[in-house]
Image (cartoon, rainbow, N blue to C red; front, side, top):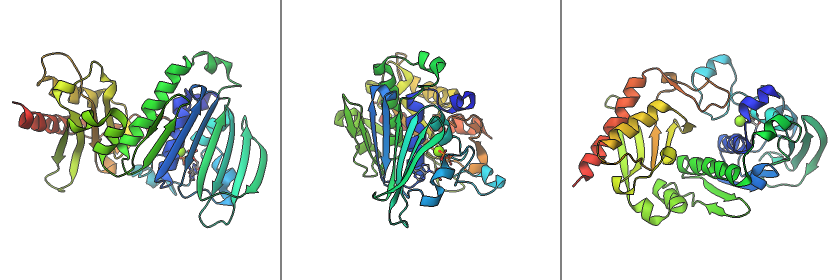
Length: 320
Ligand code: ADP
Ligand code: MG
Protein backbone atom coordinates (compact mmCIF):
# COMPACT_ATOMS: atom_id res chain seq x y z
CA UNK A 1 0.00 0.00 0.00
CA UNK A 2 2.95 2.30 0.55
CA UNK A 3 4.15 1.60 -2.98
CA UNK A 4 0.60 2.07 -4.28
CA UNK A 5 0.66 5.50 -2.64
CA UNK A 6 3.48 6.58 -4.92
CA UNK A 7 1.30 6.00 -7.95
CA UNK A 8 -2.13 6.71 -6.48
CA UNK A 9 -2.05 9.84 -4.38
CA UNK A 10 -5.58 11.06 -4.96
CA UNK A 11 -8.60 10.40 -7.20
CA UNK A 12 -7.04 12.36 -10.07
CA UNK A 13 -4.13 9.87 -10.11
CA UNK A 14 -6.59 7.04 -10.74
CA UNK A 15 -8.12 8.99 -13.61
CA UNK A 16 -4.66 9.68 -15.03
CA UNK A 17 -3.63 6.02 -14.99
CA UNK A 18 -6.91 4.76 -16.45
CA UNK A 19 -6.94 7.40 -19.19
CA UNK A 20 -3.32 6.59 -20.07
CA UNK A 21 -4.21 2.91 -20.34
CA UNK A 22 -7.11 3.78 -22.64
CA UNK A 23 -4.82 5.88 -24.84
CA UNK A 24 -2.22 3.11 -24.92
CA UNK A 25 -5.00 0.76 -26.05
CA UNK A 26 -5.57 2.98 -29.07
CA UNK A 27 -8.94 4.32 -27.95
CA UNK A 28 -10.56 7.05 -30.04
CA UNK A 29 -13.31 7.63 -27.49
CA UNK A 30 -12.77 7.88 -23.74
CA UNK A 31 -15.47 8.68 -21.26
CA UNK A 32 -14.79 9.57 -17.64
CA UNK A 33 -17.58 9.65 -15.11
CA UNK A 34 -16.95 10.57 -11.48
CA UNK A 35 -19.06 10.89 -8.35
CA UNK A 36 -18.10 12.44 -5.05
CA UNK A 37 -14.89 13.94 -6.39
CA UNK A 38 -13.85 10.48 -7.55
CA UNK A 39 -13.75 9.03 -4.02
CA UNK A 40 -17.20 7.47 -4.33
CA UNK A 41 -16.77 6.37 -7.93
CA UNK A 42 -14.64 6.74 -11.02
CA UNK A 43 -15.60 5.07 -14.27
CA UNK A 44 -13.39 5.22 -17.34
CA UNK A 45 -14.67 3.55 -20.50
CA UNK A 46 -12.83 3.27 -23.79
CA UNK A 47 -13.23 1.74 -27.24
CA UNK A 48 -9.63 0.51 -27.41
CA UNK A 49 -8.17 -2.97 -28.00
CA UNK A 50 -9.54 -4.51 -24.85
CA UNK A 51 -7.86 -7.24 -22.82
CA UNK A 52 -7.98 -10.87 -24.03
CA UNK A 53 -10.05 -13.12 -21.78
CA UNK A 54 -7.08 -15.14 -20.52
CA UNK A 55 -4.98 -12.06 -19.71
CA UNK A 56 -7.37 -10.06 -17.56
CA UNK A 57 -6.16 -11.45 -14.25
CA UNK A 58 -2.54 -11.01 -15.27
CA UNK A 59 -3.14 -7.30 -15.88
CA UNK A 60 -3.77 -6.90 -12.15
CA UNK A 61 -0.54 -8.52 -11.06
CA UNK A 62 2.24 -6.27 -9.90
CA UNK A 63 4.77 -5.34 -12.59
CA UNK A 64 2.73 -7.10 -15.27
CA UNK A 65 2.78 -5.01 -18.40
CA UNK A 66 2.06 -5.92 -22.00
CA UNK A 67 4.02 -2.86 -23.13
CA UNK A 68 7.66 -3.93 -22.81
CA UNK A 69 9.17 -7.20 -23.95
CA UNK A 70 12.72 -6.77 -22.68
CA UNK A 71 14.76 -4.31 -20.65
CA UNK A 72 16.24 -2.60 -23.70
CA UNK A 73 12.72 -1.37 -24.53
CA UNK A 74 13.15 0.95 -21.54
CA UNK A 75 15.39 3.14 -23.68
CA UNK A 76 12.58 3.94 -26.08
CA UNK A 77 9.15 3.94 -24.51
CA UNK A 78 6.44 4.82 -26.99
CA UNK A 79 3.54 4.06 -24.62
CA UNK A 80 2.38 6.08 -21.63
CA UNK A 81 2.44 3.08 -19.32
CA UNK A 82 5.31 0.61 -18.91
CA UNK A 83 5.73 -0.12 -15.20
CA UNK A 84 2.74 -2.41 -14.72
CA UNK A 85 1.98 -0.82 -11.39
CA UNK A 86 -1.19 1.19 -11.88
CA UNK A 87 -3.87 -1.49 -11.92
CA UNK A 88 -2.58 -3.52 -8.95
CA UNK A 89 -2.04 -0.27 -7.04
CA UNK A 90 -5.58 0.95 -7.68
CA UNK A 91 -7.02 -2.49 -6.96
CA UNK A 92 -5.26 -2.62 -3.59
CA UNK A 93 -6.86 0.59 -2.31
CA UNK A 94 -10.41 0.38 -3.70
CA UNK A 95 -13.13 -1.83 -5.11
CA UNK A 96 -12.49 -2.26 -8.78
CA UNK A 97 -14.59 -3.81 -11.45
CA UNK A 98 -13.60 -4.23 -15.06
CA UNK A 99 -15.59 -5.25 -18.07
CA UNK A 100 -13.39 -5.72 -21.10
CA UNK A 101 -13.59 -7.36 -24.47
CA UNK A 102 -10.75 -7.90 -26.87
CA UNK A 103 -11.75 -7.54 -30.51
CA UNK A 104 -10.79 -11.20 -31.20
CA UNK A 105 -12.89 -12.61 -28.34
CA UNK A 106 -16.58 -13.16 -28.93
CA UNK A 107 -17.60 -12.19 -25.45
CA UNK A 108 -16.25 -10.00 -22.71
CA UNK A 109 -14.87 -10.66 -19.24
CA UNK A 110 -16.03 -9.18 -15.99
CA UNK A 111 -13.69 -9.17 -13.02
CA UNK A 112 -14.35 -7.75 -9.56
CA UNK A 113 -11.48 -7.06 -7.22
CA UNK A 114 -11.72 -5.80 -3.66
CA UNK A 115 -8.60 -4.71 -1.85
CA UNK A 116 -6.43 -6.70 -4.20
CA UNK A 117 -8.44 -9.97 -4.08
CA UNK A 118 -10.50 -11.30 -6.96
CA UNK A 119 -14.04 -11.75 -5.70
CA UNK A 120 -15.84 -12.47 -8.95
CA UNK A 121 -14.98 -13.43 -12.50
CA UNK A 122 -17.35 -14.24 -15.33
CA UNK A 123 -18.00 -13.97 -19.04
CA UNK A 124 -20.23 -11.13 -20.01
CA UNK A 125 -21.52 -9.68 -23.26
CA UNK A 126 -19.73 -6.42 -24.07
CA UNK A 127 -18.69 -4.34 -27.02
CA UNK A 128 -14.95 -4.21 -27.77
CA UNK A 129 -13.06 -2.00 -25.37
CA UNK A 130 -12.66 -1.64 -21.65
CA UNK A 131 -14.61 -0.06 -18.80
CA UNK A 132 -13.04 0.20 -15.36
CA UNK A 133 -15.06 1.25 -12.34
CA UNK A 134 -13.29 2.19 -9.12
CA UNK A 135 -15.40 2.60 -6.00
CA UNK A 136 -14.70 3.65 -2.43
CA UNK A 137 -11.17 4.81 -3.04
CA UNK A 138 -8.89 4.55 0.01
CA UNK A 139 -11.64 2.85 2.04
CA UNK A 140 -8.92 0.72 3.65
CA UNK A 141 -6.31 3.49 3.89
CA UNK A 142 -7.52 6.01 6.49
CA UNK A 143 -4.16 7.81 6.44
CA UNK A 144 -4.58 8.56 2.77
CA UNK A 145 -8.24 9.51 3.15
CA UNK A 146 -7.29 12.15 5.69
CA UNK A 147 -5.25 14.01 3.10
CA UNK A 148 -8.09 14.25 0.60
CA UNK A 149 -9.51 17.73 0.11
CA UNK A 150 -13.10 18.73 -0.48
CA UNK A 151 -15.17 17.10 -3.21
CA UNK A 152 -14.94 20.34 -5.19
CA UNK A 153 -11.14 20.38 -5.00
CA UNK A 154 -10.74 16.71 -5.94
CA UNK A 155 -13.22 17.24 -8.79
CA UNK A 156 -11.22 20.15 -10.12
CA UNK A 157 -7.98 18.12 -10.04
CA UNK A 158 -9.76 15.52 -12.16
CA UNK A 159 -11.10 18.17 -14.53
CA UNK A 160 -7.57 19.52 -14.99
CA UNK A 161 -6.23 16.03 -15.62
CA UNK A 162 -8.84 15.18 -18.27
CA UNK A 163 -8.47 18.59 -19.84
CA UNK A 164 -4.72 18.08 -20.26
CA UNK A 165 -5.16 14.76 -22.03
CA UNK A 166 -7.91 16.22 -24.21
CA UNK A 167 -5.42 18.90 -25.31
CA UNK A 168 -2.57 16.45 -25.88
CA UNK A 169 -4.82 14.07 -27.85
CA UNK A 170 -7.17 16.27 -29.89
CA UNK A 171 -7.92 13.29 -32.17
CA UNK A 172 -9.58 11.48 -29.26
CA UNK A 173 -13.13 12.26 -28.21
CA UNK A 174 -13.16 12.88 -24.47
CA UNK A 175 -16.28 13.06 -22.33
CA UNK A 176 -16.20 14.02 -18.68
CA UNK A 177 -19.18 13.93 -16.35
CA UNK A 178 -18.54 15.06 -12.79
CA UNK A 179 -22.13 14.89 -11.61
CA UNK A 180 -22.42 18.70 -11.76
CA UNK A 181 -20.73 19.53 -14.99
CA UNK A 182 -19.76 17.93 -18.24
CA UNK A 183 -17.20 18.38 -20.94
CA UNK A 184 -17.10 16.97 -24.43
CA UNK A 185 -14.33 17.41 -26.97
CA UNK A 186 -14.94 16.81 -30.68
CA UNK A 187 -12.01 14.44 -31.29
CA UNK A 188 -11.47 16.08 -34.68
CA UNK A 189 -7.70 16.19 -34.42
CA UNK A 190 -7.66 19.99 -34.24
CA UNK A 191 -6.00 21.44 -31.13
CA UNK A 192 -7.92 24.69 -31.57
CA UNK A 193 -11.25 22.84 -31.64
CA UNK A 194 -10.28 21.04 -28.44
CA UNK A 195 -9.38 24.38 -26.84
CA UNK A 196 -12.70 25.84 -28.00
CA UNK A 197 -14.58 22.96 -26.35
CA UNK A 198 -12.68 23.48 -23.10
CA UNK A 199 -12.06 27.22 -22.83
CA UNK A 200 -14.56 28.68 -25.30
CA UNK A 201 -14.41 29.86 -28.89
CA UNK A 202 -13.12 33.32 -28.06
CA UNK A 203 -10.07 31.93 -26.29
CA UNK A 204 -9.44 29.41 -29.07
CA UNK A 205 -9.55 32.13 -31.73
CA UNK A 206 -7.00 34.21 -29.85
CA UNK A 207 -4.36 31.52 -29.49
CA UNK A 208 -1.14 31.77 -31.47
CA UNK A 209 0.71 28.83 -33.00
CA UNK A 210 4.25 28.22 -31.87
CA UNK A 211 6.72 26.07 -33.73
CA UNK A 212 10.39 25.30 -33.98
CA UNK A 213 11.57 22.88 -36.61
CA UNK A 214 14.77 20.92 -36.17
CA UNK A 215 17.09 21.81 -39.04
CA UNK A 216 18.67 18.40 -39.32
CA UNK A 217 15.58 16.20 -39.17
CA UNK A 218 13.11 18.71 -40.59
CA UNK A 219 10.71 17.63 -37.84
CA UNK A 220 8.94 19.90 -35.44
CA UNK A 221 10.58 19.81 -32.02
CA UNK A 222 8.36 22.39 -30.33
CA UNK A 223 4.77 22.90 -31.36
CA UNK A 224 1.49 23.97 -29.85
CA UNK A 225 -0.23 27.22 -29.01
CA UNK A 226 0.08 30.10 -26.55
CA UNK A 227 -2.41 32.82 -25.72
CA UNK A 228 -1.83 36.37 -26.89
CA UNK A 229 -0.41 38.48 -24.03
CA UNK A 230 -3.75 40.33 -23.77
CA UNK A 231 -5.41 37.05 -22.79
CA UNK A 232 -2.79 36.08 -20.23
CA UNK A 233 -3.78 34.57 -16.89
CA UNK A 234 -2.94 35.40 -13.31
CA UNK A 235 -1.46 31.98 -12.51
CA UNK A 236 0.71 29.30 -14.00
CA UNK A 237 -2.01 26.62 -13.98
CA UNK A 238 -2.91 27.07 -17.64
CA UNK A 239 0.46 26.06 -19.02
CA UNK A 240 0.73 22.41 -20.03
CA UNK A 241 3.77 20.61 -21.37
CA UNK A 242 3.86 17.32 -23.21
CA UNK A 243 6.97 15.41 -24.13
CA UNK A 244 6.34 12.86 -26.85
CA UNK A 245 2.65 13.23 -25.91
CA UNK A 246 3.19 12.50 -22.25
CA UNK A 247 2.09 15.19 -19.81
CA UNK A 248 5.06 16.29 -17.74
CA UNK A 249 5.67 18.60 -14.83
CA UNK A 250 8.92 20.49 -15.10
CA UNK A 251 10.10 23.73 -13.55
CA UNK A 252 12.65 24.07 -16.28
CA UNK A 253 10.08 23.96 -19.09
CA UNK A 254 7.74 26.31 -17.21
CA UNK A 255 10.53 28.76 -16.60
CA UNK A 256 11.63 28.74 -20.25
CA UNK A 257 8.11 29.61 -21.37
CA UNK A 258 7.42 32.21 -18.67
CA UNK A 259 10.69 34.00 -19.16
CA UNK A 260 10.21 34.33 -22.92
CA UNK A 261 6.56 35.35 -22.51
CA UNK A 262 7.33 37.97 -19.86
CA UNK A 263 9.56 39.75 -22.34
CA UNK A 264 6.34 40.77 -24.11
CA UNK A 265 4.26 41.73 -21.08
CA UNK A 266 4.39 44.54 -18.56
CA UNK A 267 2.68 42.65 -15.74
CA UNK A 268 3.70 39.34 -14.26
CA UNK A 269 1.06 37.16 -15.90
CA UNK A 270 1.15 33.76 -17.55
CA UNK A 271 -0.01 32.32 -20.84
CA UNK A 272 -2.60 29.70 -21.45
CA UNK A 273 -0.33 27.36 -23.34
CA UNK A 274 -0.12 23.90 -24.78
CA UNK A 275 3.49 23.05 -25.59
CA UNK A 276 4.24 19.81 -27.39
CA UNK A 277 7.88 18.76 -27.37
CA UNK A 278 8.93 16.01 -29.75
CA UNK A 279 12.30 14.50 -29.03
CA UNK A 280 14.20 11.29 -29.76
CA UNK A 281 13.36 8.71 -27.13
CA UNK A 282 17.00 8.29 -26.21
CA UNK A 283 17.24 12.01 -25.37
CA UNK A 284 14.73 11.82 -22.57
CA UNK A 285 14.20 9.63 -19.50
CA UNK A 286 10.68 9.27 -18.14
CA UNK A 287 11.49 6.45 -15.76
CA UNK A 288 12.40 8.82 -12.93
CA UNK A 289 9.38 8.49 -10.65
CA UNK A 290 6.46 6.02 -10.49
CA UNK A 291 4.00 8.74 -11.50
CA UNK A 292 5.96 9.19 -14.76
CA UNK A 293 5.32 12.95 -14.82
CA UNK A 294 8.97 13.84 -14.23
CA UNK A 295 11.40 13.82 -17.11
CA UNK A 296 15.10 14.20 -17.49
CA UNK A 297 16.50 15.53 -20.74
CA UNK A 298 19.94 14.65 -21.97
CA UNK A 299 20.37 18.22 -23.28
CA UNK A 300 17.98 20.28 -21.20
CA UNK A 301 19.53 23.54 -22.35
CA UNK A 302 18.65 22.81 -25.98
CA UNK A 303 15.04 22.13 -25.09
CA UNK A 304 15.02 25.31 -22.99
CA UNK A 305 16.23 27.49 -25.82
CA UNK A 306 13.96 25.81 -28.39
CA UNK A 307 10.93 26.77 -26.28
CA UNK A 308 12.16 30.32 -25.89
CA UNK A 309 12.85 30.59 -29.59
CA UNK A 310 9.36 29.32 -30.42
CA UNK A 311 7.67 31.81 -28.10
CA UNK A 312 9.78 34.79 -29.14
CA UNK A 313 9.33 34.15 -32.88
CA UNK A 314 5.57 34.01 -32.54
CA UNK A 315 5.16 36.97 -30.21
CA UNK A 316 7.55 39.12 -32.25
CA UNK A 317 5.56 38.38 -35.37
CA UNK A 318 2.34 39.37 -33.60
CA UNK A 319 3.46 42.39 -31.63
CA UNK A 320 2.16 45.73 -32.83
P1 ADP B 1 1.13 -0.46 -17.67
O1 ADP B 1 0.19 0.54 -18.27
O2 ADP B 1 2.34 0.18 -17.06
O3 ADP B 1 1.46 -1.60 -18.59
P2 ADP B 1 -1.09 -1.03 -15.87
O4 ADP B 1 -1.11 -1.62 -14.51
O5 ADP B 1 -1.60 0.36 -16.04
O6 ADP B 1 0.41 -1.12 -16.39
O7 ADP B 1 -1.87 -1.99 -16.86
C1 ADP B 1 -1.48 -3.37 -16.92
C2 ADP B 1 -1.83 -3.97 -18.28
O8 ADP B 1 -3.25 -4.08 -18.41
C3 ADP B 1 -1.40 -3.12 -19.48
O9 ADP B 1 -0.05 -3.39 -19.85
C4 ADP B 1 -2.40 -3.58 -20.54
O10 ADP B 1 -1.96 -4.77 -21.15
C5 ADP B 1 -3.65 -3.90 -19.75
N1 ADP B 1 -4.65 -2.80 -19.78
C6 ADP B 1 -4.92 -1.94 -18.78
N2 ADP B 1 -5.89 -1.07 -19.11
C7 ADP B 1 -6.25 -1.37 -20.39
C8 ADP B 1 -7.22 -0.83 -21.32
N3 ADP B 1 -8.00 0.21 -21.00
N4 ADP B 1 -7.30 -1.42 -22.52
C9 ADP B 1 -6.52 -2.47 -22.86
N5 ADP B 1 -5.60 -3.02 -22.03
C10 ADP B 1 -5.46 -2.49 -20.81
MG1 MG C 1 -0.88 1.96 -17.23
